[in-house]
Image (cartoon, rainbow, N blue to C red; front, side, top):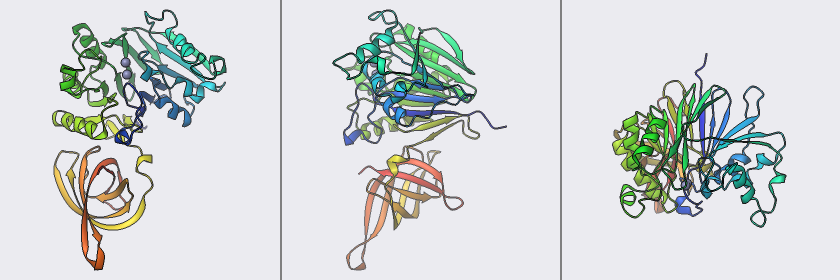
Length: 390
Ligand SMILES: [Zn+2]
Ligand SMILES: [Zn+2]
């Protein structure tokens, strides 16, 4: 019998507003949208930010024993969490069925989410109205403290500290527990407790990490967001196994997110920065939590032959240096086979010997950021995909 596996895909990880500038390319610019496929085939979508459009483009109808329903949880009504809805093509196909879950906002009243849909698609904001959405849609109001089951999975919602309110969701699947706590600020004792209850013992704890600890204390206090430091503190307190830093600030470049992650890793063993295209599996034998980075972002490679020296940090945090041959390279990155297993999302120094003029060798030093690790072609080796960062 195989172990039950849950698969969590990150379609949008950026907070507040989408970004398209090259400086944010590596972590991605789409706003929050996650997809969780539970071991029983139930499909969950968490938030409807602009990442939802890409999920729609790669749509594979859910496969839970002939049941083609999808359950969509919307944490709150700020733009970055709803903006993908009109661009989600499966909503326009008659055979699909969606169950939407969100809270009753005091600003909107009954059927808050339905009203949000209608307002978003009203003329002249969008060229077609809601009647073009042919999929079956059901809306369910939930509030903090509610708990219910869908298939073999138990869902719990809790209030979080955020302007105009926000819900965090805990999904307990037979493969492990995922807690999605975006958009929350620490400092309100009652709601801090609510977040602790939500996240207690989670296998995967996805927490708001929009601001630096310094910003959170000063210029961004009261804006409704958190920091990597608060996430690390909380993860330790409530015994979360893996922390995912989420809702990156639109002004945080990839370099800044790298630095945030580096600091978090100094204090926490298992932490990732959410990255568009990242997939995390829960419940696989061996490691309980496994992360995979997007392949598409390392494509366009060419074959090559460069001798190279590579230094970096292994999964266990040990520094290593080894010599290898780079056989596959592009302007963006390379695929390097190594005997050491570097840490995913860590930095490698790659020094390559390149044939210079008159047969003289010259060397080129690059910083490579580890985006994927696969089994190597030869025994005892791993194939490491890196993106060059400068
Ligand atoms: Zn947000
Ligand atoms: Zn918000």
